[in-house]
Length: 327
Image 1 (cartoon, rainbow, N blue to C red):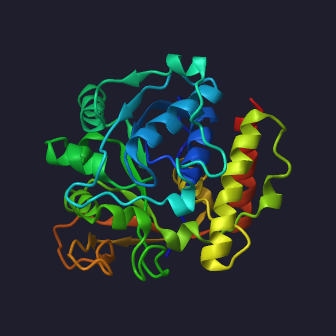
Image 2 (cartoon, rainbow, N blue to C red):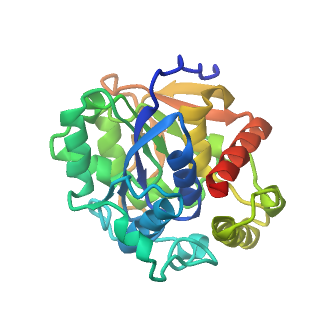
């Protein structure tokens, strides 16, 4: 095992597409991605997962609007997995995906958010065609949009600079089944399609993202304001879910940890392994979505984060979130 090496500083902000199923931790990641000067957020693609696609799209657009990033195109993607019925996580993220606060009211400013008519797989394909080797995709939900693009002939492996995915688990107990993580379990066929195509470069599984726990007191220092209230009310729901489900007084913020650990502070990833992986796609709900090590020598190896420097990562995340909500 070895730490991830920090990349050489880029002269320009790194072009990024965020693929989200905007629930609570996606929301925090989106706020950080939209306000970090090191990143050039070129677009956000939406996929059903934590909540239905209409909630994902609305949450995404409103969050971008609240930080003044109406310029970021939002592409609406898959409303269901490739072959399975959609399962959502209202008990984890709330009825509409943002916990105790629901971003459902009319907001005149939202009209200026750039919702593109191009569906997410075609949107990804267009960026590959126009900017080959330039774009990074960080996928924070089920991989349905990426798999659909790949199945439609988009060469994500060669056409993108990098694909990072928050999903799966290697040795850590799953959060959906004993061996399965939520994003993988929602659409196992999409995960397997992406792994088989060599479309994923790095994975942040539960083994890494559950190395640090956030408590409500961690957010006490956020600047006061409307957006802070939204964030705190959402995270408070998340914390209460974990208390009921796991008996812990806090929550995991898988998605922003992945964003920061992959692109903004890769030096905070303390251990990685390189594996050839596959994903179980059987009809058995207790094993579908399980990642396992593949004996197929033709599979492209994937770098998997397995440990995070917890306290520095927590400090980094909270500092970036404070800047995002402080406007």
